[in-house]
Amino acid sequence: MNTISYHYDAEKITTGILHIGVGNFHRAHQQFYTNAILESEDQKQWGICGVCLLPSDENIVRSLRAQNLEYSLTVCGRNGTDEVYKIGSLRELIWGIEDPEAVINKIADPSIKIITLTITEGGYNLDKETGAFILNDEKIQHDVKNPGTSSTVFGFVAEGLRRRKLNNNGGITILSCDNLQHNGNTAKRAFTAFVEAQDKELAEWMKTHVSFPNSMVDRITPAVSPEDVVRLNQKSGIEDLAPVYCEDFIQWVIEDNFIAGRPAWERAGVEFTDDVTAFENMKLSLLNASHTLLSYPSFLMGYRKVDQAMEDQDVVRFVRNFMDTDITPLVPAPKNTDLEDYKKTLIERFANHSVSDQVSRLCFDGISKFPVYIIPNLITMIKAGIDLTRVAFLTASYRHYLKYKTDDHGHSYEIGEPWLTAEDQKLIDDENTLAFLELSAFKSADLKGSVKFVELYTEFANQIKNKGTGPVLKSIIK
Image (cartoon, rainbow, N blue to C red):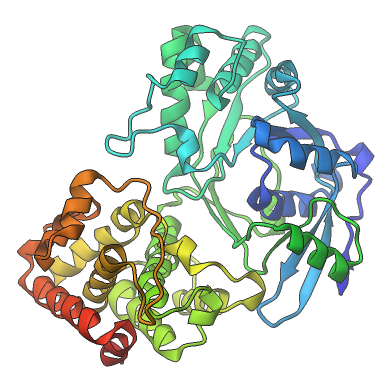
């Protein structure tokens, strides 16, 4: 196996970025890009200081510290060829549970020009219905009332910014690297709401001293099990306590709005833009929507791994027809992007055996995924008179998945829907097939008002129940 080591003197790298949330995706994505640009003599100031804030982070902190913060990243090729990279761009690691003052002082340090975040969508503490910051959360209230004794990311960042302001240490960029639409706007809304509740003067300072660019991130990075650690180390020949593996595809598009400077990430393939919207729409409508589209039918057909489902040519044609017929007319390709190549690559990525995802993970939390990935384009499709066959079949499959909890082979399963309400459950239990179309996930669309959608959906719901998902899918593919 080919092992690629970095060729810079890690001891001469200084930290200009503080990253909160040192998980697998960060180590396969941002660290990968940064590791590459540190080879340039004029980029030595852009090493990363990692910050972990949770008690559950103890294992990763201790593992990385035991090996001088270096780790191996196995990039799994779609052609079956893997490459191992030694990553040295993580130069400091602070555990907030152990030393909270060190976190705050580092945020205030004038050498830090960018705070990056991977704290998950839920980490921004926004109400799913209104999008408003949840101020009445117990931990948030504690941090609002007790500056400097922080337990949340908002408390830590606010106190660091306050000291930064007090010491005239200059502005800073907060860059979300989480996989959510307009993540910079989300971060701005959350951090601004917290600071306004705690310190009006600091909130005013932030208006001119903190920028929040939006970014779009993409790289499939599976969780690493203890068995994976053994497997990866055997293949690489490296004794690594914290190895990571990922697919060979990688993308990062960032709005170029950095108030205190930035690394030359473009040298490693990052794309900078004035507006990330077109890239987000492409990813949400093609990658994320296709994941949702294949998830419920594939699961009901008995597939439990995505790459296994993609060995079924009926599933492949179903997904490709959705991309080509339903979505491509609605999604303008971003500048310099070949949409045909992007779609072809997506199919290859879904089929990559080395980074196979669980279909159950794609099925998880459909109540949150449908409103973001499916419904906006479905509304447009209904208005434009576009063929609704595939999305109606998906909706019928989702109902069957939630209602009957048994796949085509008679195997029962548990569903994962943390945001399912009591009213939703009544609609699922209702024997009237149309009741399901009033589910909270669909509330922004008048699905019952579309005669064609209702006709297709009702027919598919009955056919799936009587014939099974596989035969119905076969009947609708081109």
